[in-house]
Structure formats: C-alpha cells, structure tokens
Length: 205
Length: 74
Image 1 (cartoon, rainbow over the protein chains, first blue to last red):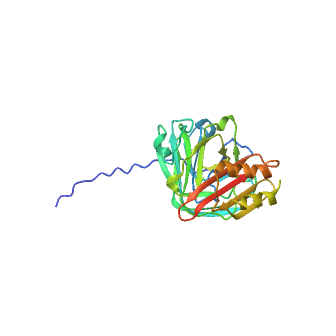
Image 2: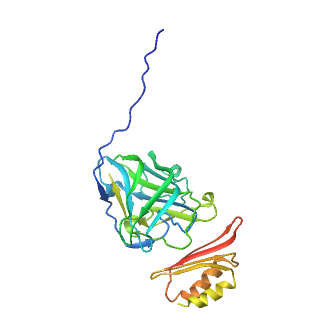
Image 3: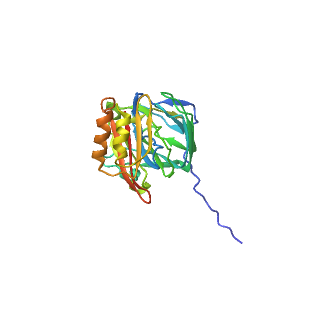
C-alpha cells in the first residue's frame, strides 16, 4: 500500500508573548450606561474602536481586558455573551451601525471570538477598573490596523433595578468611535446608534 | 425633585415596578404603561427636571408582557 505524503498547512499566526496590563490612554470620567452592556435590559450590543496610534505599534497578544466601572455597578454574571475583536482599516464606526458591524467595516481581518456565547463575570467599584475579563481565545493584534472590541449580549436576563454605569471618554478622540443599543424585546430588534462615548479600558497583552 | 408627585402621575399611566433613587441618578420602570414616549418623558421631567436634565428612556412593547417604560435621569 502506498501512502501519499500529506502536507497539512499548519501555519498558525504567531504572536508575541503576553506581557501585562496596559491602559489605552483615553481616560475620561463621563458616565454612559450602555457600553459594553446595560444589565437592566435583556439584550445589548456595543462596539468601540481604538486607533493604532492609541494602542501603539508592534504586535500584541491580547488575552484579557478590564472595563472602568462608573457609579453603582458592583458586579454581575451574564450568560450568552459573545465578544469579538478584529482589525479594521476604518478609523470611525459607520454612521448607521448594525449588530453585524463586522460586515459593514472595511479591511476586517483576524475576527476572533474571544468569548463565544459564554459567561462574563466581572466586579468592580466606582471609578475603578473591573476585575479582569480573561479571554477564552487570544487575539493577535497586528500593530498596524485599528481595533474594534464588539460585545454581543443575548443573555435574555435583566436586573430588576437600574444599576449600570461605565466610565469613559466623550471628547474629540472618541468621536464616532462607539455604538450601542439595548432592549428588552429581542436581540434582533437592536438598532445601535453611533456615538462619541468610549469606555476606559485596560488591555492585557 | 418631586418623586411622590412623579409616582402619582405615572401611576395613572401604568403599574410601577421600581423607582431607584441614588445619589446621582434616578431609575424608573413602569409596566403596562400607556401614552407616548414623549408624554412619559415630559411627565418625568416635570417632576424631577429641576434636578436631572439628562433623561434616557425606552418605551417598548414586550411580547406577552405589554408596554414597558424605563428611564434613567441623571
């Protein structure tokens, strides 16, 4: 019996090792309730865009992040969350974003579900970064494109009270670099609106 | 800010689920509520607009549950 030699393309993206937590320098103190999610509602969608010039050049292996809590949030566990990271050549969010934002943006590469319909548990305090949200799958940032962090909340669960705020910036560098929506009706009914707010985040890379 | 007046006014429109009064915001949730979103927003602002000018609200028809109004005033 002759066995043909088989050559598998096992080329995997290589990436630099994870070094530590890094703050993207866009700190602000504006409260916004809906990014990355408003747990007063059953379904949420949010996305924020960071420029390469803000993240810095050079490859980075991102495997976690922290959001800055605003007032009132202490902790939550939320199921059915998908978090996508991807490169884009666009520098702003489209004027009419949808929950399929990744199909609307240009130059999208390395779309990675760092959490795929999983549970997000984070805790924190006012004006502090949350506990670390560690990714299930790492994202290799290429150091040249811009970065989108997209959060899809299909949890169909809601808190009984209004308890959400998140801190971020609402100024010139964040204009048109965020979008969000929330609803109790259905995930399909979400219709995100582009805005000028973007969370303060720390990336672990 | 007149929370009692607000509650009385909104009780003519629907069923109170919760009003959360914190140091820097008020969260309001009514079920089976009637009226347009603008009418409801106007009622809220009439009673607490002297304290909170930033109002973010939703009025949704939830299948099987009826109309729900939620707002946050900061």
